[in-house]
Image (cartoon, rainbow, N blue to C red):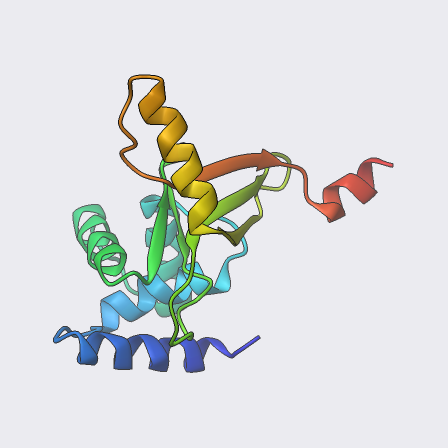
Amino acid sequence: MKSVAAVIHHAEEHCKANGSRLTEKRKHVLTGLIKSDKALSAYELIDFCRNEFGETIPAMSVYRILVFLQNEKLVHKLNLANKFVACAHITCDHAHGVPQFLICNQCHKVSEINIEKSTIETLKNSVQAAGFHLVTPQIELNCVCETCLSAAA
């Protein structure tokens, strides 16, 4: 796993290449998501920035930063939890499949996996056959991680 500094540097370069800028506050919010193994809310990120950097960022600013980071494809929003995670592929320079999220319902750890585009296309066709239109192919799966499963045994 790469260091947080290396991931932030790669994110900065990504933003520059796209004509945008990763400001200090954006770096702070992204750092919180990179360091966490679970999804965080905007308010949890406010607490992180205050504790880690001694900086209080207003909630509206954090939400704007999160929208920016989403648009840059550096973070993902988990819709069911209304929380955010850093993209697991920030430092990759190649295309990936559609991201899916495994969420432990006990410790709330989140892992990002990719599902083949053909699987999503099959799902999309099934959705259309049922008379619906797929808005987003993102799937959030309720799981139990190995650590929690071992602890329960």
